[in-house]
Image (tube, rainbow, N blue to C red):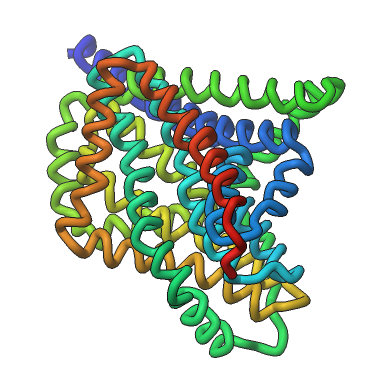
Length: 385
């Protein structure tokens, strides 16, 4: 009897230790995303912000938003920069496509996280699909809303109406609300101190390499630990998730992203759950949509500190919110449109799982090569304001 009791206590202690290990690994996963973001900032320095000078027409604005966010690895940073540029006089009509582009560029982080499962064909297929469904959703949103916006400016006009309606004599500065920085900055600063003697861009490259290494390692161990912990509970977890209303899941994704102020973090934490089979692509889908809405909080907070062109700054922040909210309502609300990102993600994931190098080609082509080509082509046309 004592032996049985001791075995139970030992198993319970082991389970507690494993859950604690998962929490630590998730923390390091969040740290890794921050390291990559800081690495890109250090690597490109002020050159990243110089990208915005190329936004001379809506097409260029869209591409600049994609490239800048893919480089900086933070749509929150890019949207905040855009708000600042609008406050400094950048036309809102140019800034709107830049906001759309930032939505596309931020999804590169999910894809990098999914590479942590590349050693297991089935896991990689599920993880890569969970990562790229965000790509396909945001791409579909651009295909629908970009032509409408440059012809009617309906997002710009609607946002201006609400900005004027919400106009107050003095804005409260809420830009310090950054929970994710509170838990990551000490560790990131410690690493930066270690590499302080390295010259640019090598200091940034080291951070990027370290971040990617931590992501791959964290995903590997999180997957193994969760499998051992939840192998007998997987079915009940799936049933619980299935019973939840999609609207509730969208709301949860929104709230979590507002708290961490990083859609990349929210969606990246979903990818491992898909990889090990705890959640299906259809179940993760609403969470990702919620993350799209939740990430708008950063631009709105940035707008609270604008002293000049305050209405325009608030307007572009509201454009971001209206765009993402409208995308969720229209695309997810129409069954035919809703299924397009799922089909695209599953198809691409199947191909990438059969030939993993396709994933790397996809990353380079979609986030860098194709945008640069389109950017060059857009310069051949007169600016459309």
